[in-house]
Length: 347
Image (cartoon, rainbow, N blue to C red; front, side, top):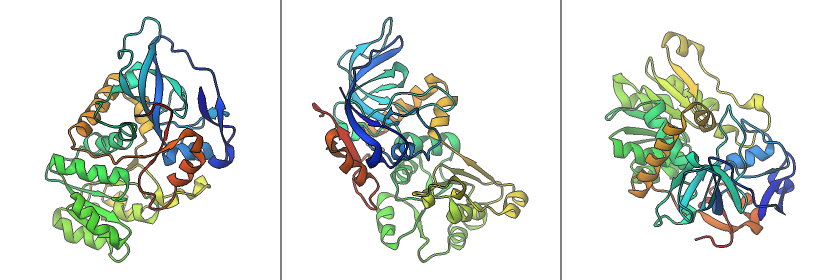
C-alpha cells in the first residue's frame, strides 16, 4: 500500500516521502479501513516540524487527525461496523495515552470505538473533516463553557474554520456571538454567516467595543484561538468571574521557539476580578473522556452536519502523489478549501 511517511523532524516538503508498506492487520477491537480521503491540517504539519503537543517516533506515517473510508476487515472476536460500511476514523492521539498510526496511508487500522458511520450523501472531501473542527466547536460551546441561550459568547479568529462553526452552532442554540476579526473586509462575511456583532481589530478598540456591545452585565464566556496580545485583551474584556478557553495560538503560527507562544495576561485583572483563563486541546480531551462519551460527541457532530446545522465546505482533493502541492496549499494565506489527500477509488 502507499503511505506518506515523514523520515524525521523537519519542514514537511523536505522530509515527507511516498513509500510502499505492508497492509496492516487489525487486532481485537480494531477494524481495517480502506482510506479514501484524509485532510491536511495545519496541526499535522506542526507534528512533522516537531512543534506540536506530542511527537511520534520517526520515521512515521503522517496525518494525525481523521480520515474517511470503508471497513474491509475486523479484528478477531470484534463487533463493529459491517464490512463495506463507510466510516469516519478519528485518529487523534489521546494525551496521555498510546500513539496511533497516521491517516496518510491507503489502509489503516482503527479502534472500533473511534469509528463513526457517515451518511452516503456527504462526499469524501466533507466527510473526512467531520471529527476535528466541528467536534472542537461543539465541545468549546457546550462542554467547556456551557454557554446558555441568550448569553454572549466572545470569540477570536471568527473567520477560521472553528470560528465559523461556532457561529453556526451558537445561532442554532440561541447564543449571541461577538466575533473578533483582524481585517475590515471580513466583517460583512461574518455578519452574513450569522454573527451577531463583529469587532475588527484593524481599526477598533476591542475592550471599548465589548463594553459597548455587552453593556453593564458584560461578557462571561469567551474562546481564543489567537493568544498573544489579542488573547490578553480578551481576558481583560471579560466581566468579573468570566472564563476564557484558549485552544490555539494563531498569532505565533510559524514560530518555532516554544518560549514565544505566550499570552501577556494582566495579573491585576485576573486576581481582583477572579477571571479564569485555561486551555483546551482535543488530544487531551480524548485522553481523559470515556470512549462512550467520545462516541456520543462524535455522533452528535455527525448528526449536526447531516442535518445541515453545521456546514463543512468541500475540501480540495489532491491525489496522494501530489502531496507536496497539498502541503504548500495548506498554509497559503486565504487558501480557500482545505487540501484533502485522496487515494484511488475516492468518491
